[in-house]
Length: 78
Image (cartoon, rainbow, N blue to C red):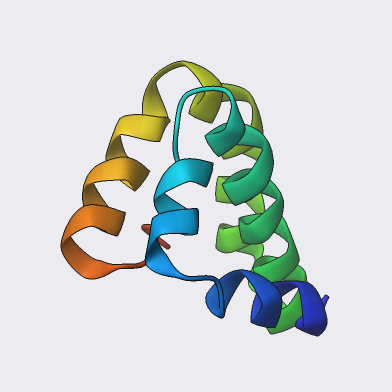
């Protein structure tokens, strides 16, 4: 899990932005949040990641898209 989190954190911001587009966001950044929650043993992050997998495809991608534009990293919420 640590390698997956490190891989996503090391991506260039333009690739992160592409992964935040509708459809990709729920899968990519949802899995990232689940992996980060498991790595840090953070139950809140794990639950947010699971929710993000399903809801990120439809509406939550907007939040990631904006935060990646502004902060060059996705919203973590924990």
